[in-house]
Length: 163
Image (cartoon, rainbow, N blue to C red; front, side, top):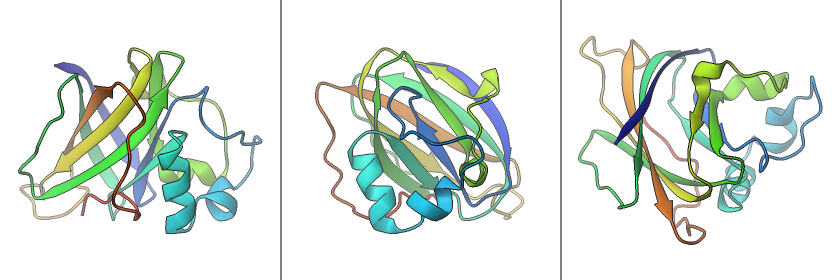
């Protein structure tokens, strides 16, 4: 079920998805990207704990994100596919530019907040190269938040990638 459409311009090479009450404590103005979210193991460990998920787009640009809710796991046949995990405990997740982690602020545009029931979510992301052939050129991304009964074990220890 489609729950929200978001258009986001990013200057970084990816997105982050998190629940405000679960994310690590980050001081205003801190460079969390450089200190705590730079290596594959740092990104994986935070995602495996349900705190914050990084999603590499491989490029800056304009992304049109279709957000879906499901209680049944989904399989995609898109050109690019990625999976992750996030724990929701305050009824919403936020989707932001990865580079927001370089100069942290708690302020988030309302359009980037997706309301969800509390629980454990497998995040299934998929995308295709845009018609223009240029990644990030009004590129559509589908993100399905699949409600699970328990924490999600992530087999791939790398950074979820859509490129």
